[in-house]
Image (cartoon, rainbow, N blue to C red; front, side, top):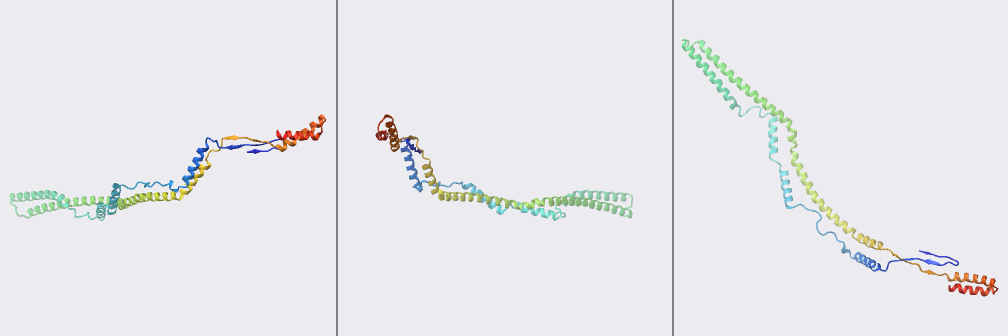
Length: 283
């Protein structure tokens, strides 16, 4: 900063300078910053891969899962076919186990029929009425009972089989929507596998973009570093205040004072002015 004064005043100039003990370090830092700025190769992006790619195990698992998802489970179409046949009523008749359930009841009815026939023959034989119409009527009655027993047993078994299968039909009908969505299980897994693969590709793309952006910004980054070093260098901490005298003003002031003094003591004012000006100039 600086200031000036007229008349009999002086001019004071204050100059701020760098501390001489710090000057070599600042000069060295600025020269290093300039050297680094002039070397573009000093700023380099990490040469290696900056993302983790899939391991061999992960890649093998992804491949196997993709094949499995594309092939699908053989159990799903088999279950869907079984469910469809149940809904369509293909098991309402022709139960392969029907005969096995009917045979014991039929055998019991047959034994009862044979017992009734033998009893009737014996009774009519002892009564001397063997071959009579009454005997024939008794035999026909026994046969009718046997037929009704077989029919009743078969009807009960058939009814139970039909009721059970109808219940299964209703249960299959309610399970049909859930079974239909099973088709999307493999599709969703394949979609997830595709998204996992895309995530690795996205990481690779991000790595390439970051490298590209780094190379584009490298010159500006070097310049910014250089400017930051230059502007950030420490300012001076030493101040000197030399005093510059205004000799012309002092001479004029001395001449006026000398002339006045000479007049007061009886000298020639001109001589007093000359003397005062000389004193003011050398002061």
